[in-house]
Length: 256
Image 1 (tube, rainbow, N blue to C red):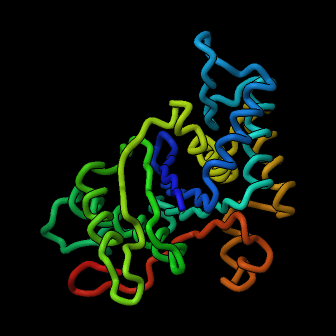
Image 2 (spheres, rainbow, N blue to C red; image 1 turned 30 degrees about the vertical axis):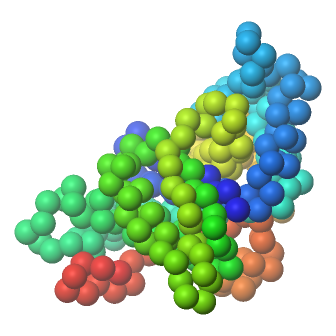
C-alpha cells in the first residue's frame, strides 16, 4: 500500500483539510495517469509529465487534465479519505481542546495537527501493513517533527501482525513525475475546499461538480456528510469519504 498525504486550507485559515489517497496498486494508477498526460501532451520540454493541482485548474486544458486525474482515481482500486476541521470561531472550534491554558498556542496547534493526521490514518489502515506514507511539503506543522511522531506511532511491529502498519514515512515533491499520483489526491482534496468556499473561477467549479457527479452526491459539505453514519458512508461512498471533525470531550491532558 502506498499512501499519499496532503493538506490544504484557505488564505484566512477558516478550514483545514487533511487528505490521504490510499493506493493498493500504486504502479497501475501511476501508469494510467502518465498515459493520460502523454495522450493530452501535458508534458514539459524534457518529455516528463507536467504537474496538475487543484489550484492550477484555471483553463480548459488544465481542467481536462484534472478530469483525467479524477477518472484515473475512479477507475482504480485506490480510495480517498479527508478530514475537515472548521476553525472558525462561530463553529465552536477551540484550540484549547489540545492543551492546557498556560501552554503556547503553537504547541497546541502542533498537537492538534498530529492528532488529526493520526485519526485519518488509523481509521483507514485497520487491515493495512507494510505501507509507505509519502507526504507533500507540510506547511501547517513542523514537518520533520510531525512525521517522526507518525513514524513512531504507526511504525511499531505488533505481535499479531509481525510487521508495522507503516514501514516508511518520507516527504516527497509530488511535482516530480515519479510521485505524480499524489497530484490526484490534491485535486480530490481541493474540490472540498471549493464546496466550502466557492470560487468565481468556472473551471474550478466545473472540476468540483465533476467529482460530485462521479460520486453521485449532492454535496461535499457538512450539511450532507455530517448526517451520514459510518456504515452509510461505507455503503454509498467506498472510494471517497469526507469526515467533518467535531471535538467531543476534553481531558486534563488536552487530548480528545
